[in-house]
Amino acid sequence: MPESASSRMANDEIRENFSSREASALSVFVPGGLSDEVAIVAYARGVAGLNGVARVDALTGYYTGAESMPPNELSERFSDGSDDTWVQVVPAVEPISVEGEALVRELRAIETPFAVQVAGPSAELVDTKDSAPTAENQVSGDQPAGS
Image (cartoon, rainbow, N blue to C red; front, side, top):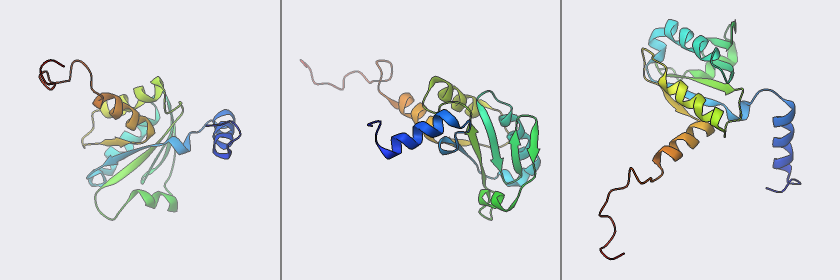
């Protein structure tokens, strides 16, 4: 992308001058999570304390490290009227980086009373790399003889 492109200039300014990476947030889908709001609060607080996390937004409030704020009308976006919910994890690290990949792996490894599915730019990178063919995961015999 040329440095003179508007989208490039805007991204460079945001990356260099703002600490939050809102546009690169990870979405964590929690099927059935609202059946246990106490567990959602504990999960959000735990995630907010992870290295590489700037903030966690959830139906139950907003979490940054040791601090939390109560939910407001914007928090309603995390509910569809069912027991399913999702939380938004705003990274404090560059999403397309080793640190971004590590954050995704850490989010997926957290033990919770509910299943979680992580999406977003860093998660897409991890999944793409994990699904790329390697010598270990290719099936032998896929090529015709003599090739």
